[in-house]
Image 1 (cartoon, rainbow, N blue to C red):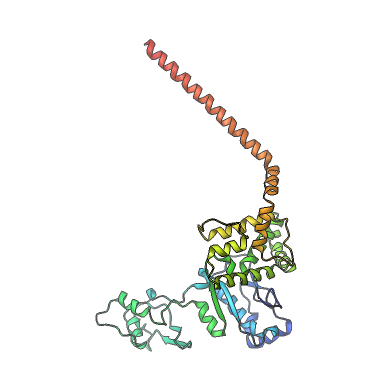
Image 2 (cartoon, one colour):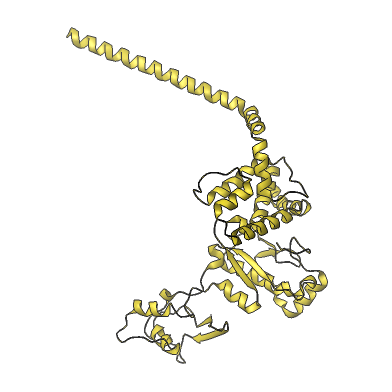
Length: 362
């Protein structure tokens, strides 16, 4: 999802893609991910035990970084990627716990690449010429890290953890340095800071509305949902919401004030958790039959909140009509249960009285 007039989704023309292939022939290599034509958008391959793990996400973003410079409209542009802060995107490449202290000890990698204080890529070998692992003590000496005498393994790990070599550098951060792309990891539980979350909401809403509970229908609805997203120009509303949010936070507004801004004063309570915003988004899905305006809407959340306020009574009436039979059946069952309980209580009382009478007679 790109914030550019050529969007909302990124792809290259045939001519642009052929130019990219000259530089990166690997773009046409077979893999488990089905990429859309001349694009980095993808769906995972069906069959098998496939899923988007850390490596597949990195491969997809690497493909994106390779394709971006060949877009004619993007010439002389700088690139900034907003990525949600999931573990799949933020996994560290190496951990100190995977290394031993002495020569010949455990070592998970042949060499370590890291970014120094000058933002340049450096490499240090982890094995000597004889094929033995150097160990953390020798690596610390090569990195000019002062190690006190009789230093224990845990203390050595603490010392090295402050060095750029062993800092929890995300794999994606190394990739962005390689391709000169800037990446910002958005905060967790803040869908308002990443417009792509709005696309997922729209896509799921569309699929739920038109699904017939069959897998074949699901595979056809996914591209239909994307086409519907473009047709209704939902991305424009998401981008407006994004910039309003960024501006609000930049002005010093807190999360509560941002919520009120989106919900038009409907939200006046204390913040309990960030999940409340997801609850509001979930509530808006109840109004699938209401199409958002194409020109004068501020953003999706504000619009849906407004319609929830005006249509609350209509929705409750519709809900009652649809489930009146169920409610009546449930009430009847409750009445029957209560009646059954009263009968049982009377029977127990009669038995108890009978036993009491027999005891008196004896």
